[in-house]
Image (cartoon, rainbow, N blue to C red):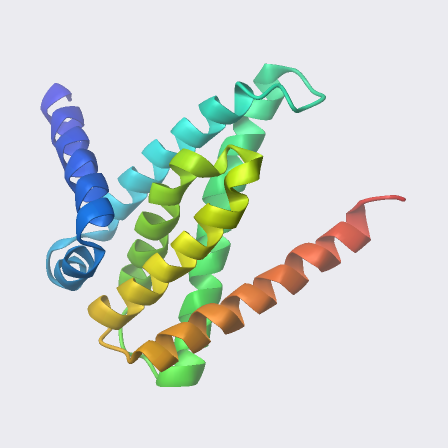
Length: 175
């Protein structure tokens, strides 16, 4: 158990450093070396950090025991939904160039690394474009797509995600 946690921690630190220093190389190696389990572990660690850091802001109306899991599920859910939409967009635009596990890993690592700053609301203007750029870089290097197709996939999946969130807002939030 301790050695498994140690290995996960080492991989987590390696992935974080590689994503910050050389994301192209990291994503090139991703398709060959990384198993989806590592992406899930990375996502869980980043979502836990995001949830705990978001609780520090105090910008919520419910008790901590309710909001902590909500912040975690929001972060993890957005990664799962956006990776699914990204995979569907890739299949429609470029064909099945990679498995869902590779696309999920790209989204998990790209979103995970930006979760360290995205709990601060005023950094949204930096973290979202950075995440989109990392996803484009991942699609280009891990799935071997052109920049044009990578950008188109991210744009289509982001627009669809926006309309899904907007329709949920209209359906469930009362004015």
